[in-house]
Image 1 (cartoon, protein in one colour):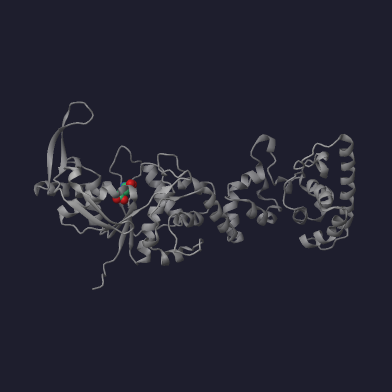
Image 2 (spheres, rainbow, N blue to C red; image 1 turned 180 degrees about the vertical axis):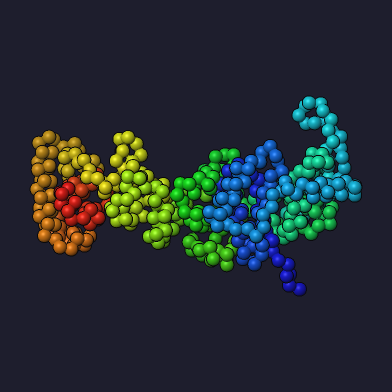
Length: 456
Ligand code: GLU
């Protein structure tokens, strides 16, 4: 008979630190699995550890979910469920499936406390993990494990089991580190007569050095990536493709596509690296596909105020698009990164650059191996550069259509006959004041005829 039970998944973060890509991947996989199966996705904030949980981290999860577009059908705050956890704890004690144990506190203080232990039936627990296959554990080794600090304070395993049951969770999709918790939780489910959910434990997400990414070990939090101007949709795509792919070469996926094809079976068993290079690649792909309006919505917060209303700005759209990996890179395009570099890579579009005459000399450029050249040669080179510039100016003056192709067409034959490097180099430097820039035809086309001739 076909199983018609509606699939319900959850993401159950403990708000004890900033969450990195690995955690959001768990969330997204649980979300996608629910969507793919027309099920329900629940967000449950597991804040029962009062000392370590912080509201700011909970708020951060809500905010990142909203930004990257993971929506949930229901939301729970675990601590609000404490009465229910206590009720179940009492039931376990009254049914003799758990008991109060008077024990000396572990902190060496000599204080005697009541803690609550689960009466372990000491059996082999086997479950079928949807990613790793069958996993068996002899729970005898676990002893009568602790499920509450006292009758008022149920702990993690009990809270998880009660909530998973009450929320109707059919599939527990979570990080691999919880595999060791599963046998305990299954024993508690069984003791309570609750249905046991399906489990899928996701392999680790690794930092580029192949070590485990963790909240504590300085992995970059997803909020920070967003703040740096990575696009939410690119981040989510990169996160999703970390340890999963549908078995084709495709890497760019729309949300709708993912919701249609995501499949736990294609999650790879080995840990997968989440690297910034790959993220940057995804981001560039997504930036390419933004409409002009979307592009400027993301770019604007990064444009220095003094350039915001400049008529030059809109003309730079494609140059900026080509040059950034993330939107915060715009800052260095316009403002520079250090006092020596105060001008910013592209500020010459807005202000006439200061040009050091020596830079005009083709044979004196910094990439040249037998540099520096003699004073005499330098003088000659500069003179030649001025001649080229004058000629370029004359060729451009008569130009009626001012666009990339016409500018290039007007100069090309002359540059080819004199030596393209020698001619185009001073043109680049005169227009930009820089040795590295977009090609001089492009700069000229953006600057406009009047400004170009002035600079030449
Ligand atoms: N709250 C746990 C954590 O953040 C997850 C518990 C679970 O998914 O079962 O690691």
